[in-house]
Image (tube, rainbow, N blue to C red; front, side):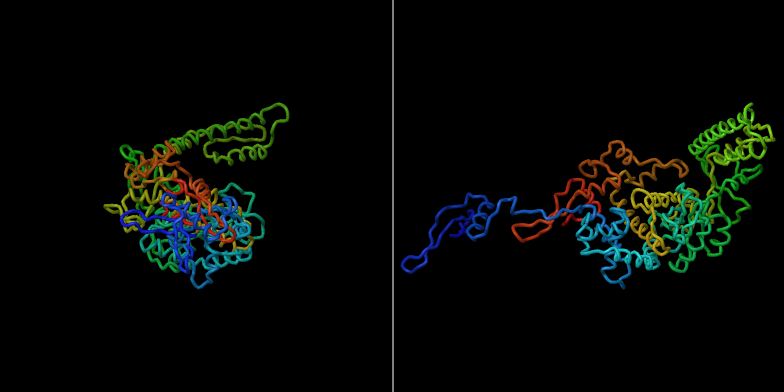
Length: 589
C-alpha cells in the first residue's frame, strides 16, 4: 500500500490510499480510501507506518539530552562579533588560543569567576552555559585558560594600539583617571600599602590608570605598584600615547589630583599636549584673596565666568558656582563640626572630672588630635591645652572663609577659546561651556571603575601572585567592560540608563547645573516600563538583571527517535526578542 497524490486540474489534488496487485501477469492499482480530508500531519504518520518506520510514544520519541542557558551568550558573543572584538586579538596566534581569549572576555561579562571556575563553565562536561559549545572549544583545561590569559597580557601593547586606532586621533579629548583595588595574599610585587579608595587600608593594593575616549569608551589600562601617587602615573601614559599610539597632539582631561601643576609643567607641556583639569582648594583660595580675579560678584547673574591669572600664563580659567553643591558642602560641614565638637566636649569632660581626670598636655593633645584628624576639622577649632586644662571653641573666621567658597570650582585649560563648540572628541578650541562639559565627562571613567570593581565585572578580589598575570587580569576586565559599554549603548531603551543623551543635553541650560534625566528617562523610571514608541511596553531592567532574563532562553540538545541529535532553541519571550533585536543578533541555536 502507498499514498498517492493525484492532480485534479484547478481543484486541490486528491490524496488516495492505494495498493498494487497482479492480475493475469499484469500490475494493477486499486484505490482503498480517499484521504483528501485528512490533516497533513495524519497523512505523514500513515506514510511513516507504510514505510515500516517504528512509531514511539511522544515521551520516548523525544528526549532532551541537555539544556544550557544560551540567550545571554547569544547576546554577548553576537555583539562581540558585531563590533569585531576578536579582530583586536593578534591573528598570528593559533585559532584555539584566540577563541579561548575571546571566551575569557565574554565569560568575565556573563559570569565573573576565578579562572579555574571559568575553565569548568567552558568545558562541555561541567558547562554552566553554552559559550564553550558556541565557540567549539571542546574539552577545556585550566592550564589552557591560564596560558590564554598570559598570552593576552603579553599582547596588551598590540590590543591597545588597535583600540587607539579605532577610537582616538590627533587632537582628540582623552579622559584619564586613577583608582586602586586591594589584593589577596602578599606575594605579588605590585602589592604595596597606599591610599585605599576601597577603604581597606589593612590590605596591600595596586593602582590602576584607565584611559577612555571622549565618549567614555575604554582604550587602555595600566597597573602600577600600590604606593604610586596619582600624578606619577601620568608620564607612562604620555609615553604610551606618543610612542605606541603615534599621537602627536592630545587634550588630556584629568582630575585635579592627577593633572597637578607639577605634572603639567614637567610632563604635559614638554610633550606638547593640552589639558583640561581643575584647581585644588588652596589655589582657589589664592584666586579669591582680596584683589584677586575670583570675586563673589562674578556670580550675581550667572553661574559661570571666564577669568585669567598671572599665576597661570597662557591658560584659561573657567570659574563655576553650583548652588546645590554649595548647600551640600554647607550641610556636610555643619554635621562634621557638630560631630567633632561632641567628641571634643567629651575629652574636655574627662579633663575636668574629679575622679581620675585626664592629665598631661601630651595625653590631652593626643586625644584631641585623633578626633580632629579623623574628620579634618582642626582648621575650624581654636584649641588651648595645658597639663591640667583644656578649652576649645569654633573658629568663626575660618568657617566663614571656607563657606564663602562653597560650591565654587575652577576648571583650567590650555586650549584657546572658540566661538562655537568643537565636535565631540576633537578640540582645537573650546568655549567655556564645552570646557566644563569636557571636565565633567570624567564621570564616564568613574562609571567604568564602578562597573569594573563591583557587581558587573568583579575585578576584585585579585588572587594572582605574579605581576604579569595581575596585569593580564586587569586587561581582561577592561576588555569585558569594552564589550559591556557597547552592549549598554544598544540596550539603553530597555535599561534604567539614559535612552536619549541628546535630549538630556538640550534641556540643560548650563553645564554647571545638575544634569537632569530626559523626559523619556523620567517616564521610564516612574513606570518601570519601556516606552510604547519602542513597541509593546516591557519591564525595565538593570544590565545585570537583563542578562539574567536572557539566560533563561535555553539551547536544548534533543534526541529524536533513537539516534538523531539536534539543537533546538527555546521560544524567546518578548523581552528577549526585543533585547536581541536591539543588539542586532538573530536568535539561533
